[in-house]
Image (cartoon, rainbow, N blue to C red; front, side):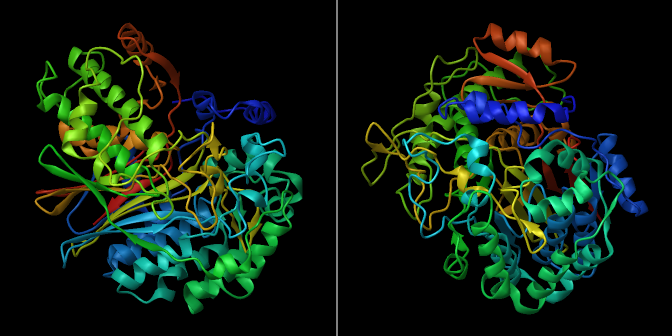
Length: 613
């Protein structure tokens, strides 16, 4: 586990981030989306405490009827109460997400956006809904460039109103409930309203993050007044009351999403953006015209399963599929010396383990090269979705991989496509602060939702009791390279590319695994790695989540701090990889659906739990 970061480092990190060139992806990605902190959160319910103890002991939580795994115990409690009353996974998500916006505001909330995969047991259909934020009508491709045409520093762009996109989470919550909910909408928001009115106990994680970020939080008066009362950061154990958030949820409960996107709330959000230290472009017109979108899930056959994720504007589903598909094509073709392993005792440093890491690391580099060139909002630019995961194309990418040595370079491939492709590679930064929840209800429905405000505490601008996102900084800061346009450049109404990867794995048309994680662009590696560990190596869901991470994106292998880290780094260096040992602060929350029942896992790196009955 990574050591805690000192508050004295905050100005240093800020100045370094602003000075770094945009092209230096490895350097900028070294800034963690969220710091590693004390992992405990206050729990009063004995059953939930038992679930927390199971996580701490490395055991999955088991249940027969339903289960929820989410990033904070109060959100799990809210969702569990709904499931116990006969609510669906859709109902439980609404209650849990409303609570997360209160108790985990640094990660997600009404001012952010997200993606949902939903399996409807009655129809057997898997759906995906896009609640990603959109760029304002007045945004241009030069939004994050200086007068001289150079990209801004990251935090220079983030803090203030310029980075705020139209929030999508409220419309997404309502859209999911309208399609698959059973319980009354106002009832689902009541627990969060009560907690906001009466106050909740600040967790050690939230307090530490406020302390670390206070130099930026203090720049907006409402934000400072809430997180830094009387000028000092809130402390763990403090009772934090948010009547403004309760009032917003009351309006949301009675008027639905329309009450958020039109009228006083929309005006307040727009004014907060316009009056921030760096004024933004979001207007009431932009708010009124926001809609969520039904998208086709991205699905790939893998080892007798079907791994399904979110398509563009997320890069998560396609890139996870490419990593697993390339490794599968390599091992099942004539390229690999070893077969796919299926050994839950596979230990760090064995030859098979190193072969797996080498293959997955090379496959990830190839997939990230394609991601950087081709994936963006498919409503604005043509994306070769089918071509990127076509069997023949994955075989050609597998031919460039190796399970014994790091490949020298990874370049974008040429997937089959019915449009001309001439894009430059993305140049930008992504340090998102995100959350994930997985839910299975008593009816057999399954939900995987990842939501975010982007950087920790988003834009640091607060309105109506919640923080506004800085999701527009997920766009490329450059619009062109040598005259060639970048697919993920800023455009009016466009949705920035995301790394969020909510995933549902199917077997014979039914869910067997629900998984996802926060963690910036490392989300993709965390999810692919966990699926591999569970389905290929045979680890139970808690083990698969808790084992030390090793992920590759752009060439350097990130190895999670731990007792085996130095040895593993040395072995991977001998195979040609550059390595970096560091804290890898994922937030995986997953549920495995087995013949024996439900098994839930929650990431020991954060304060969430899994619980079911």
